[in-house]
Figure 1 (cartoon, rainbow, N blue to C red):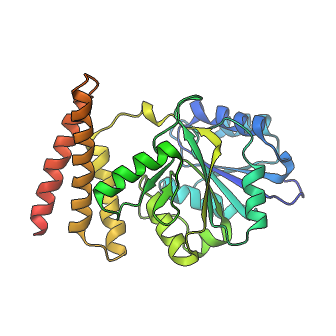
Figure 2 (tube, rainbow, N blue to C red; figure 1 turned 90 degrees about the vertical axis):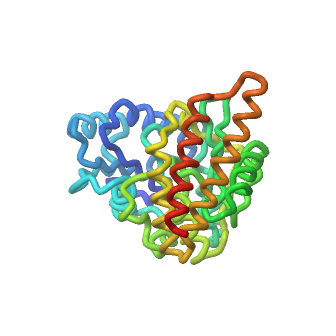
Length: 304
């Protein structure tokens, strides 16, 4: 390991991710705008079923020996794997990246210097892109404890115009910067959640401890093709269950959480009905939304 002091640690958790990780690491190396010696690359493999030895060997060849490669003791989920990587890291600033994220431009120097100049800065986000030319509609989202109608409208409008409201909105978890010391003080990732839905909880705990000192840079962009993922009822119900768990820890009632989710689904369904008038509706998505509304309404009735 190089003796050069690291300015940033990039933590990536892999699980059967060979098809993604090499391009991810290559993009970091290609667009690094600070010396590689100042970057600590930490890869944690969550007990891939395909093995990790060949992947680790290739990563050493492509990045160099100055890389931290960790075989996790078990697959404890995305958050637990990231916690392992963060605890092994040495830099004051952490960049969390999914293995299917790609850098599209130099975007390390500006955030790192911002953290170095502003000791109160907690988190730093960038513009998420679905393709190199098509922006994502979810670089950030309204908190899950917000009124469901307001959350849906604000998330849509503010993403379109890059209007990030730190106190009300959390960054997508696929790629964000965070100050290590502050993240550690609030307990890092909640390891009781295996995967997904961690971003709002992280935002809540960091804001509560240090204030809404988050910054969004719309000029810095990364690629994360989330539009390729199917929308399923099962996945959405899993996210709802995670919200219910996190909200219970914060003293936020189950009924409010369920009502907000129904409102979100109703507004998205209304949007699709408007699209239907011009022949652009996604009928499968509409059916899924109706099912989610029915299931969540039943859950709400059980609470009354």
